[in-house]
Image (cartoon, one colour):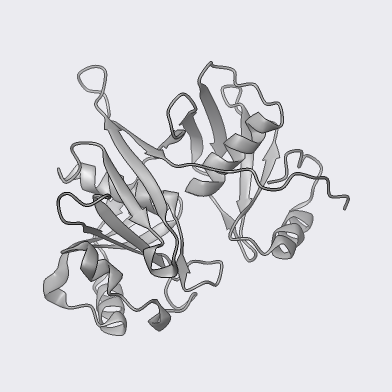
Length: 262
């Protein structure tokens, strides 16, 4: 994360993101909205993203570490490509309010291509949808976590497929309630170890049709030896006619700190 990005051009940010070769590199600017604490731009080595989960929590952690003081106690307000995202820094772990998600039917052509390419047994598919919360996801709710873990990520390549998301429930009594996988990320990997923006979109989708009624814990990265853990916490509206807030929580760690002169 570049804490003080003011003055950098689009080309300089793109070159820096390609040089880091990280899944996402973030750049912080003064906010253009008076209610926000900072504005963030999120770049992969090849494109800019309107929103992403890890860059949201990670940028918030780095901004606070660098001396940032939120305007509201216990709450950081981040301005990004999808608008203002609230981050509750009073929870453990810190959690962002999942931005609105547009849920539409998955195109039949996309469904057939994905199912045929990955050899997904059709009887294991409970629901599908296209989800848009900045990134656009082709989302599948499969019968079980085992069905999710059985998918062969080597069969998909970006940009042929873009942002495939899968979720399935673990058996009762398991450490985590659901297993999630995100295949064909734009970073060029076959699989993403953790994807907060996907989990945020899945949470809104599941809540909309009654599949998410209480806090749950999601595992991701299992097939690539990562033990990613994300919390999903739906908070009912404070008054009639309000909207449920869905908090997406995860831990971040600051590993390297320094100065780059361009």
